[in-house]
Image (cartoon, rainbow, N blue to C red):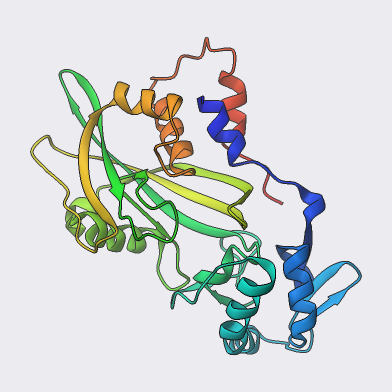
Length: 289
């Protein structure tokens, strides 16, 4: 295990195994060849044309595409699981389907289906840290055992996917209250410090993710507490302990490692004399097409 190994895991992309998903004449996602066969058999609004899966060719508006996809979703969940090994479910939260952040969405898609269709998704990740005379410490969460993704793994103080109807800061404040019982006043002090992205094939899902990263310095006496059941507990770890855990184990959720490595770099804890230092830096920011 190593810092670079975690980055490589988040950049595994066997392109020959996937077909593009096209909407309104542009590629917006990827699907496995097995899932493409399911979609071809499903029929309209899906079609397989010239080596690409096309959705909603006869649907000219985002509203119509969203409605058609939603009406197909439950049947897709059943067929995808039985025939292509894609075990997703309706989540009741809509994500925008866009190529780039800030674009008008060509449709909205239920969160549960996004990774099976290789749609780029966005999220917020919050590093909660404490500074004292001994140095920096980070709040580390333990994910609930019933989480659909990475149950029981270690996590940030706060993280969450970005729905279409909230700003990044609104979402961060909402997630901070739900996951860690942080007040809007406290969470509102978080500072945006950048964004990371990756494209990988992970547990039969296509993860094309952009993570907006925030830092929040907390006082020594402030303790977060789980609220919505997504976390089991929080612990305050010295920075050196977090670094050892990331470098030597896979205890953290796979993409959380990237955000933590970025924190180590920004706070001067990762030695630039390391021979893999530049590979680590470049690996945190894959090209966005």
